Image 1 (cartoon, helix red, strand yellow):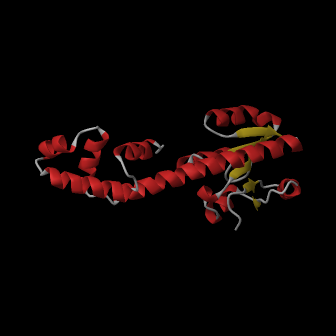
Image 2 (cartoon, rainbow, N blue to C red):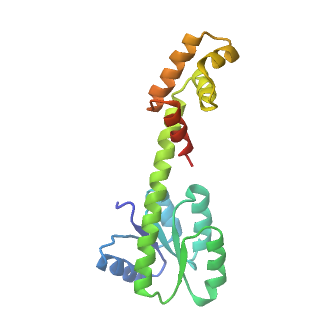
Image 3 (cartoon, rainbow, N blue to C red):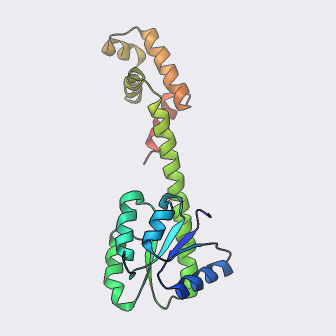
Length: 200
């Protein structure tokens, strides 16, 4: 299945097909779903580029889906398609973190513009999430002692001070410090600090 692309979720087949055709005409591949339940059962939200969701759907509404997605993967950009009477709900969804809402009938130029913007944002957020996950994986490789020494290094403490505080030989501090740098893929305390400060 195509990933990092718009996923269209609407119970109206004609609307789904029209939206997919419009996106395809602008070189944007998409995946269509007839219900929120099908999307949740058969897709992995974290693999999507963005969602285009009808607010009013049977069984599970677009708002209910948005709430579920927000709890699971809050960074996924969601564009709501709304009827006039749904605007207050859509405005509240924007306050809750939705990317945008577009009133039906949808302006085609505006839709394409917002979808492309949502895909860009989704890609940026996915890169950040992957970066954070990679650093967390590296941190898990550190021993308890290495974590202790890393914290001291990040606080700017010299090896001798660290050795005195932890009651170990300075040579032991140097060895652990070297292992921390190696495992984290850095060459200095400055690089280590920059790496960890980049985690969101």
